[in-house]
Image (cartoon, rainbow, N blue to C red; front, side, top):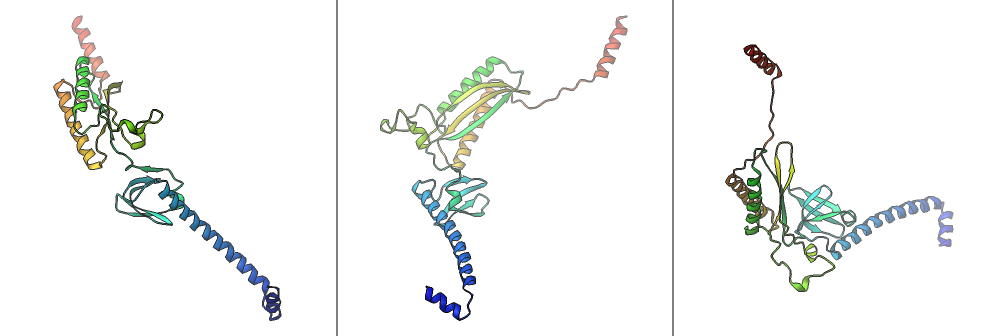
Length: 245
């Protein structure tokens, strides 16, 4: 190496400039290698930890869609408006990932139904019981009474329902007195996790709730305004006073 340096100097070649160039190039190479290694190990983390797999419906930040490829350097997602988004694995592996496919039973249906203040409380009580019965008997609604896991799969220290993505809660309650309505909370889960089938189940539940309210003489509430004309009211009172005299 020393002989090569002396030879290059003897030939009039600027050794300092060459070494400086090699130093900058080496630094650039190291930076590029660092990013590549980060993406590579990020991809390994995704596959080893099974964060998601191809075909899963995921959401990372503002990106939501179906995973179409998990490469060594990047992950590709097809969004629901049909765009293709490529994300570095180094970012994906350290981000919070919502994976909607990691569910076995239960896609949530949550709604508030408002009835008018003219409603009879006994009718509301009966409607609550009817809605509870409807959900318990509905073939598309997950029931907490059904056994979705075997006894061998249960663990007293850990909810296996949470591990396997199983939700079957059913709640129907009179929840609050709102500005324009008396609100009923309805909270349950469909058996299916498929979006389109979930929409079908939810639609059927909504129709059945409307039938139950009608059967119990209840009406849906909506915002209303009551206007009082003070001038007209005063004029009317004045006429009554004159007639009284």
